[in-house]
Amino acid sequence: LKFIAPSRGLIGYRSLFKQATHGSGVMYTSFHSWAPRKAELDKLRKGSLISSAQGVSTTHAIAALEARGIMFIGPGTPVYVGMIIGEHNKESDLDVNITKAKQLSNMRASGTDGLTVL
Image 1 (cartoon, rainbow, N blue to C red):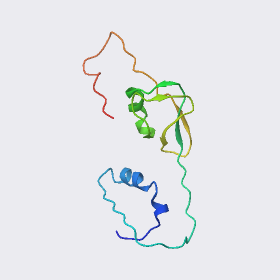
Image 2 (image 1 turned 90 degrees about the vertical axis):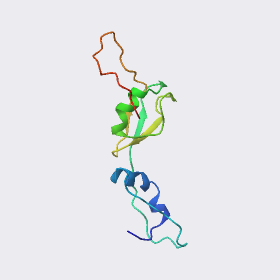
Image 3 (image 1 turned 135 degrees about the vertical axis):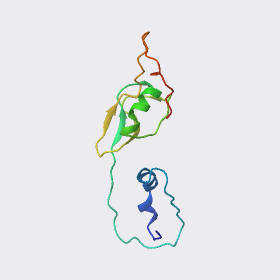
Image 4 (image 1 turned 30 degrees about the vertical axis):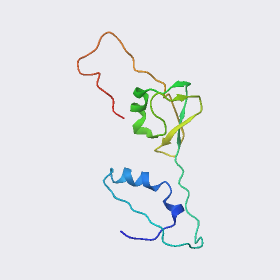
């Protein structure tokens, strides 16, 4: 598809495009020309993932929360209560515990402790 769209309408669209095409789509943009504003754009508000605990983010917690939205931080990042740590898939804000550690015990089943890849 080839079309002319305002740059302000494409801000934030690249990540949605990647999700919609599961990373297989190709998007190319280039400047066409300056033009006066023609219409107001609809505002799309996504919710935020907000830290509910203070501490250091863990790989275990980030892996569990990846389905909820896009993370802005990685493992080992210091976080505080109320810090925005990601973008929620839905319009509502969601308080999450990004510092939750994996429970370690002496009783382990074989094959359950795999490497978590983010």
